[in-house]
Image (cartoon, rainbow, N blue to C red; front, side, top):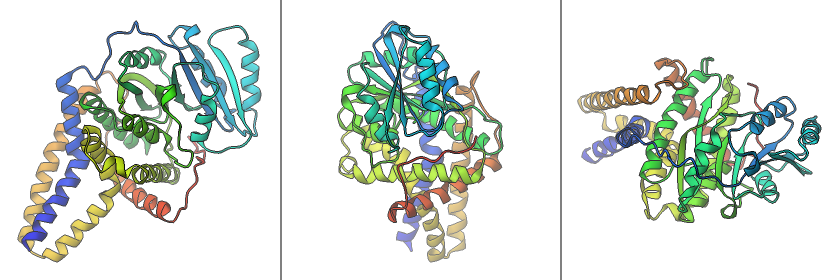
Length: 395
């Protein structure tokens, strides 16, 4: 009985730590530092190649390229490479039309054509061959950059120990039904990544925007989550991963529950692929990224459905109403206090920032859906029921 009670409290600690403890700690680190990894030397410039993988993006590619060509950065220091992977719409024609107008102008616009669609990692590897910049920045065709993105990200590379830098993802439709809770999730991610960057390195990058030194990366084309794969490769090679919280990238997220499940299930599978591929790297606690940040940010969420189920099993095995009630009371009190503290930190960092509405019911619903998604991701991973090709979702 005593052993079961000890196990119960360990499991409950892990759950509380994952959902509110770790985010609150990272927020505290960011708050105490008050620097959020901000690099003050905005005079540092270097050449940048912006990679835009595309597949049937005729509806958004013109707006995307217009956005990229108007960034607040010296035009002669960056180029844009569209990597088209077998589009059967007018994506290539639109890019070529814009290229004709951009001849002899800066930034230079290039079109690299893959004969078939092989996934985002493959497109990055293919496009990298056409890059002339020292830094490669990967972004999505349906995203939009805030104009100072490069001025926020590139100065971080002045430090030779920095191998990659990520920006902040912001949901551009935060007040829609499902996406309001999604925006809350991304706000917590924003807080965690600021703390992680100060402590050691961010756990991973956003797929919508990540930059890295060109010679360091070759994506594993069998892995879905290339953003996480790139982050792990860089940290494994001894480089730090930094966060530029004022480098904003906007993109809509699905407001349809079925499409959210499809999208996030693939992300879960990609996370599991990376965990099992690099398990030898993570088994030795060689730095804070390996020993603390990655387990708290990525491994625990992959285990949380099983931890929640184990709580129910332990309650049944213990079957002592007093012990169970005391455990529930203690956990609710600790969870509640940490949640209130986390919301205070969130409100501090969200001053004058983009934010959606907050609904406790929607957040709980979002968490439950996410636990289901993690289980589904495990099933798809175990039975090899996945593809590296991302399906388009309506927005």
